[in-house]
Structure formats: C-alpha cells, structure tokens
Length: 71
Image 1 (tube, rainbow, N blue to C red):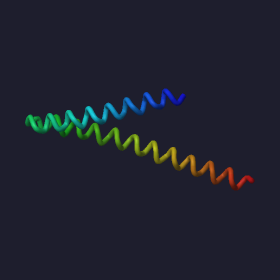
Image 2 (image 1 turned 120 degrees about the vertical axis):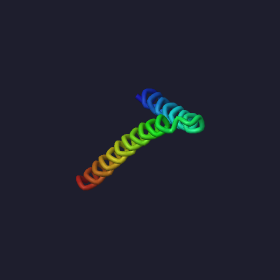
Image 3 (image 1 turned 45 degrees about the vertical axis):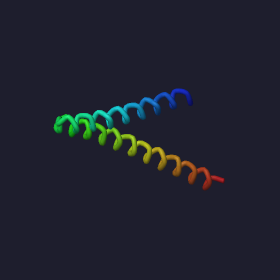
Image 4 (image 1 turned 30 degrees about the horizontal axis):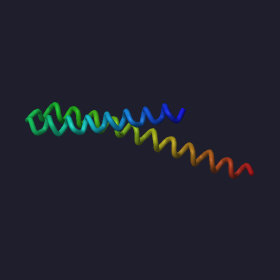
C-alpha cells in the first residue's frame, strides 16, 4: 500500500513540475492563451488535492476526538 501511495505522489509531483515548466515555455514563446489554459488546469489540480487533504485531516481529527471520548 505504501509503495502505491509513493508512486501516486511521485507521479503528481512530476505532473506539476512538467505543467509548470510548460507554462513558462509557452509564456516566453508568446502563446499566452495556451499558457493561461495550462495554468487553469494546474490551479484546478492543486485545488482538488488541497480539498481532499483538508477533508482527510478533518476526518482524522474527528475520529481521534471520538475515540478519546469513548475511553
């Protein structure tokens, strides 16, 4: 299970780095609309990941509080 999570994490890191580099390359070559679209995709992916992480943290905290109240 850990190996699968590591592979997913590394693939997301590679995706973010490649998107970031391609945005700058498109910007410096004058393709502003394409860079703007890729920037929107990057922001959308970052938002999805942060919302998912926030929800996971809230569930973890809720479970820990609930377990402590049971004791």
